[in-house]
Image 1 (cartoon, rainbow, N blue to C red):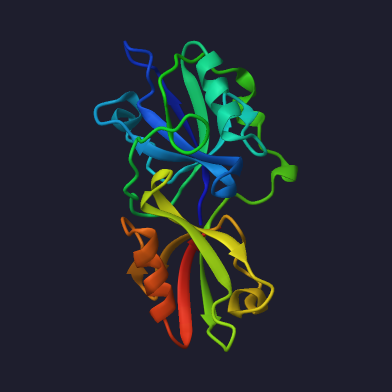
Image 2 (image 1 turned 120 degrees about the vertical axis):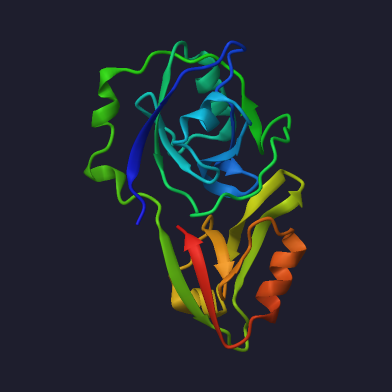
Length: 221
């Protein structure tokens, strides 16, 4: 089970935190959490040894990222001066290959902005209204005549860069709908014990298509 942890970073001489983010409300992946997409080699984030690719960013200097789009988070990071405090939850246990490829609006964009000093309110950000943090879980689907009943986006070499595999839609018919546990935006880590790390979209689709009978998914929800 994931838990919330606090990570404080100082930007380097070039004003960079050494990380890229992906996701956000209304992103091309759907309404997914803001996640760490890439760590620059030798950058402040990597040197801290406290952030990993796939970590979900819950708040930035006490400001919750839930409901924000990608551009709003990028603008927030650019407006912050001094050090910065992230509150994050653990992503998948093994890093996912994600490039720092950039796009003009959504997708993965590197943060190169200086950031401000954290406020005393950071430790009081989370209350009962926040609900449980994202966590890894295992879902077993029984493939029937309507198939597994969901579609995916992302993958290595996708139009948005090298991203993890996410659930795009859960159809009204199929094993996923009948099971009820799989949700849009869930990140699929493995299928029947086969890791999807570094796979292309097509490779992940083929693994899902070839999975018969009981299909065990390890997901980050």
